[in-house]
Length: 240
Image (cartoon, rainbow, N blue to C red; front, side, top):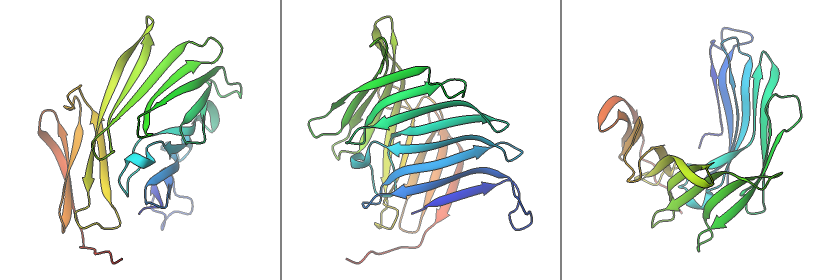
């Protein structure tokens, strides 16, 4: 499984200080599920535009080789090397988000502060995260999560607090594709914005995966293919 990647605008073998486009480093847990990703993106001059550390909150609900859904432990934006925005999330002992603070102009003062109320399913999986303003105890946002009969994450919904009620603004459907030969990459996770029935409402991705290769299809609703990427694979057998 991939532990890091750097994309350059310049050829590193021909340039002493090649400009980066993006970079990231992955950390996998003992089950081979992506636990955290630390990364950064750069502008056309190679100057950092943002950096982040993402953390999975669905380690129990993802396939080996994937990460599922999570939140940024920190996220920072820069202009010409100067910090212009940052937010930070703390997590509880179960690895679920607990507090959020936001510095809207990068001056080091966190003007917005929130805490969470968490609910779990009877199996102990994350069911909802409600974000509440610390100073006023006013609801702000809510995220909900639903799972399939194999405990894999299936539906996520995002809500805004509008006129004293939560109103859904986004629905995402998650689809999981298992490696047919149980190779080192256990599965592929794709997700897309959808309606209540799981039908895509924007560009989406599907995967065909066989013992010898896989094809990633990129489509617009309902089934118009924009392009595809085909990758050849060697069959890998794991011995126990």
